[in-house]
Length: 393
Image: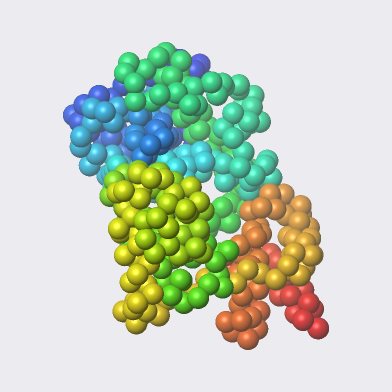
């Protein structure tokens, strides 16, 4: 990747006077230039108060000369941005980008790649796990930025000068931070690990199927792992119905049914609207508008299990005996993380430990689960498996 030297004074000036991109024609022209660069910084500002999907307020792009504010309230053709996002020659730099990526996927239709997340890189360098942008810039460049506009109304027009500056600063220095991080990761020989995770994470996001997400949402209700089969079917169908309806109506899940309300419906099993009225936090508005649909799901589940086919069981919670054992496994990870100078949270996650325990049920022996494969397995795989076998002795 081509090294680019940045002019600090120019970066500061560009953040104070960002350039608006307010038309499809201007966006296309800017994207043609950005396609010639080795890297750009990207970010978004959005609102998500009363909707299922985020509403874009701004898209920010920073290059080697300027910060740009793309106005989604005026842009209607995102094809040039999609082409830029898919250009393999241009590295896209972001900080803590999970929510931004969701917005990009919805608005632009593609995810930016190759992608570099400075927050993840900071964890690989041992600077801290889930490091915020403000602390990152203080740590790397000794620059202080404010956070006062975090909860601003990004759909108002015109934006205030403070909002414009806040948005521009989110991308002004990311490219310089990225280059500093890459140099340090290369010096520590952990850059290949970072790249491996970056490709894996982006591939996982690209393979997300919203229909499958709706079908499997019920698996998150771990507290209901032992319910009867007909109630499991009802839980699956009720969770799927809520997910599909919230997407269709573009409303938050909790506005339709809270998770706890779904649990109460399954546990109490109301048979009429009066019974629904006694369900925990069941709103009268929901009963009027959706009571018939909810009761129909319960009736169908109880009357015809066969029509739904086999339903995957919810995983039984891990036995509490593993809490102490996990601490011993974590000691292996802590020692390796300290030796390599990375955040231990990047090396070992609780969900991977739980998946490791379940491999014995699946295969009759402990195996390294997918989340611990690759560079993690190389670092601690043998030690972890040996410790797991010792627990069974």
